[in-house]
Length: 126
Image 1 (tube, rainbow, N blue to C red):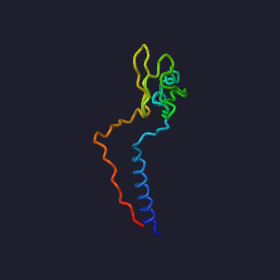
Image 2: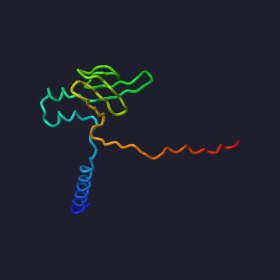
Image 3: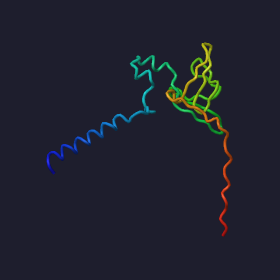
Image 4: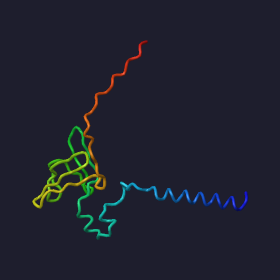
């Protein structure tokens, strides 16, 4: 191969690689809580409740907040766990109500169209 052809190939590869670097638009779900990344001191970041997981099953609802498992109606610090849904936990205390979100950076919208009944698939006859 000629040097010009090699230089052209390398240039095209580098130009293509640059496009992949800009394609990272989604946030990493495993990143530390926002307070840690914004330079807050460690004590402040630990004091803020961070919803890490939600479990919903036949035995009830529970969640993991800052590594502590809490159930519906139980206490987290000075607050009571008032509600647990698929993506949120509501903490109620004397200071007010706080809603913790499992995905705080995601704006979820529900589909308001009516659900359609499943189509019947004709059976094959033997």
